[in-house]
Image (cartoon, rainbow, N blue to C red; front, top):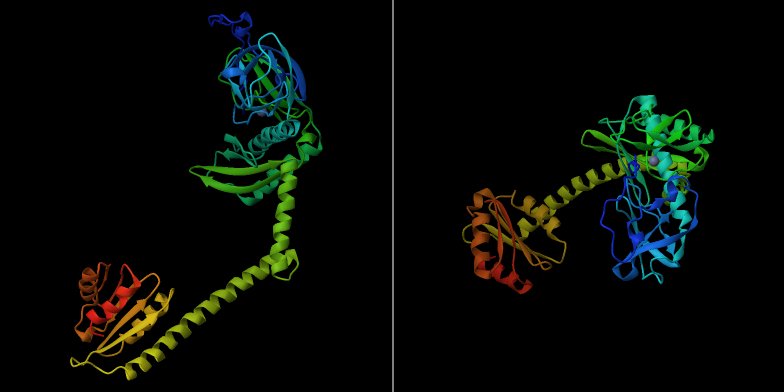
Length: 414
Ligand SMILES: [Zn+2]
């Protein structure tokens, strides 16, 4: 998916005064040899106090086409970014390079990182070819991430069987160790490309023998065997496309290992074998649902019993309304609400619930009490600097501090 830079056009930039080398087009050594790990090059220009370095040639791959740049060292200094500036490649260093224009420096590529990118990138070419050839699913876009990569297929959904078959086919091609080659061909006559290139002039074409021909400027392995295992994982619907996460090589191995360990921890928590875990979890979920529904039923019954008990113990006021106040510590609001509902289901009742942390109040009234809970609570809270509201039957609010709670009790005449 990475497009090769177009044909090298003659340099038209005005030469910099400092050195005539400054206009040199950077020769990209990775175009013809992705396995080059160390190289010597001549410094043609430095900028940013020696932290931005231009060379006559480089094996460093710059961030482009969705593939992250290489890391490594230049003249012993860490390379933190590699920027594609069209005709030149800028090497951004962690510290100034101790050499100026004309000096020869050694570049060393962080091979572990580079080879990982080569595996992911070639794996992507292979997967895109397999999805297109087996299922007519075109790759719309690709993203290479630090831990996993994704390709977006031009279909609103891709079923599990298709994903399994595509993964199996990709791995079979890996085992065939097919050659992956790079050729430079004229765009006007290059045929059989998976995606027609919009570029003219010379194209860099990456071919997987008998499978795929794509115009691409990225770094690739030389044989499909080097891609290593290909693993498809998360699938996500993105608008009208399907995003498929894929891992190749060491990443696939590490993910499979991590998945196995995760499953092992789940199985251990269930005191079961890993293969028994899914059925056990499904059974536990069902049991939990039943237990929760039984608990809700019992809580409602208990609230009714306690409401009756409270009703018996509460003397009616001169207006015949039984006013009760209940106090709870932090987290008591749910229990108070259940009890309030049960209490105000009884004749001529009002229940005031108070929770200390955070300082909050609940007011519930029965319909025949003649008391509008929402209006009453708003009136009382307004005087105390609190806030709240609700319906005529049940209302809730808060006060600035716990010591205001007893003033709510007094104001409501409980
Ligand atoms: Zn590529």
